[in-house]
Length: 117
Image (cartoon, rainbow, N blue to C red; front, side, top):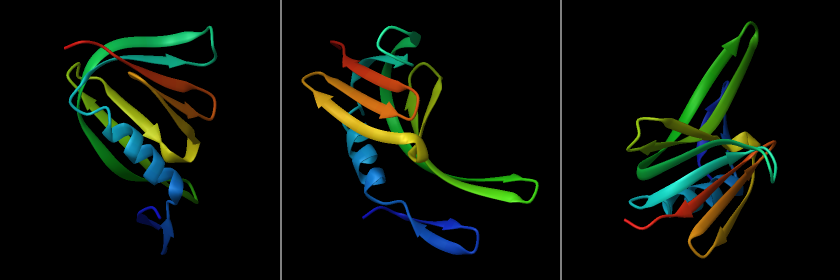
């Protein structure tokens, strides 16, 4: 299954979603992509051309008053200096196409479209 991570005083399994997201993101490494962030089929919030250098798994603990939230996410490190985070808690599915990857999250999606080097 997924990785174990500390949540409060116990360990939790991040499950199959983490394996799927990690495998999809691994295919981006070392290639040039046109990354597109959308909220629906017609609304684009961000487009950027990037070379993916590294994918980093992160575990964050967020404390808000008496509430502690533990979150697993992946950070995309690219040549533009922009940091892109993919929160596992919002991840729905990964769809792979020839020369493209679409990652669907709760209210948005990232599309990665191959560009020639």
